[in-house]
Image (cartoon, rainbow, N blue to C red; front, side):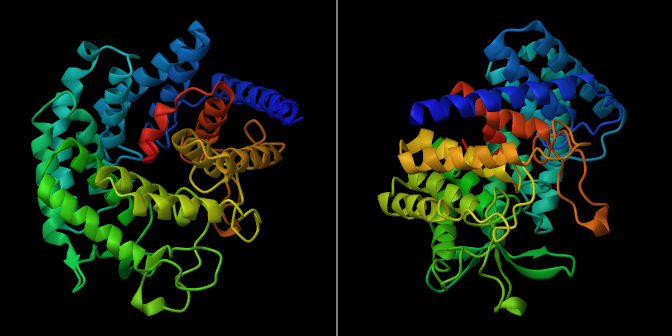
Length: 406
């Protein structure tokens, strides 16, 4: 019976993937952004992965077309260095495509070399200003250099410098726990952001990787152990739905602990960071804590209560589904597989907009114009398509490295 249900879900998801592909193929998106997570670079990545599995030239042609468009945009108007929307993510994508044998290094190396020095300077400037943000700041650029260092050894020096800066900027408490202060929210409050998208969870993933690669090893270990210790201090502080807060802000002690269920903020991103940390530190205690957080979150299925309003990877159903698919692949725990199936079914239900793309729209408040059609990886149909494709084909989703998941 379960096998029949799985096959039915697989067919429904495959049909939805085709709808998404058709939307991206027929739409005129010449004026679309060029970023990795919110633009054409991401659409190129999506099509390259389809080409690898289905071996249809139409996907390779579309992927190449999108990629060439981004070269034109970045040559004429480089206005961002961020991982999400700018040169940091663009360069990471090129390295990813090279290292996974989608494109040839000789075709893009000159561009990468030209952008490296610009990105290094921006990374140092951002971190000097305390802008650690993964999607838009120093950590995201550092993540690109980590990828690049597998080919270009001097990029390890850039990462070394980043770790030195993180060490300088860190705040060490009496118990040895470590945190980084940031500014967040419309009111620009100071505090300690725990999130994977903008906060300390992304720093933990970065440090886990630098420790494994042996870059500035001593300080990487000190910072990794200390930041994990700080986050774990805020575990199980109340009987609310979530185990961890989104952030710590002294001005909002009464409201900080109940976080959402999503990739961007809340227990899932923090648990994934802890999982990375447990591998780097070879620490079974931290691994067990991470697994238990995922198991606890697998029971959180009230969409309204969890503030789940769309299907996107960032804060929607496909993101939750893919995280549990990834953790099932990592651990073989059947509860994670079942949870992934639940959220993939919910993802199909989210395709309910007549004027949406493959039925999908991204949630925005009425004040900000209401639901919108989005194409990109982070909030749009390309990201939904990648998550569905990974489940249907059961292929290794190496693309999710851009979301700090592998």
